[in-house]
Image (cartoon, rainbow, N blue to C red):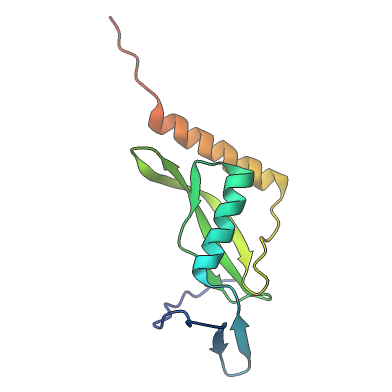
Length: 126
């Protein structure tokens, strides 16, 4: 399986869903990329870490379509230092696609490792 990313050249509609038409189907996407990012941020802060934030969502035309949102670890004075995982937002319903507890733990462990790496102080020898 592979995915093809396509940059949509038009802005999100001012009102109503985005309609995507192909040769064999028409799809209405109810959740905007900005709303998907906000939904993801709420989940990230509540379940993963307060030191992370949602990145730019990418729409995956699956069944149902989902917004794939990268999770960036953000450290004070350093900004985004790495991606610790992905969260998926249902593009029709606006709900988080459930993650296994092991996936959440893995993201938390990676966040901890990155934070430790970027904030560790070297000890001077006197």
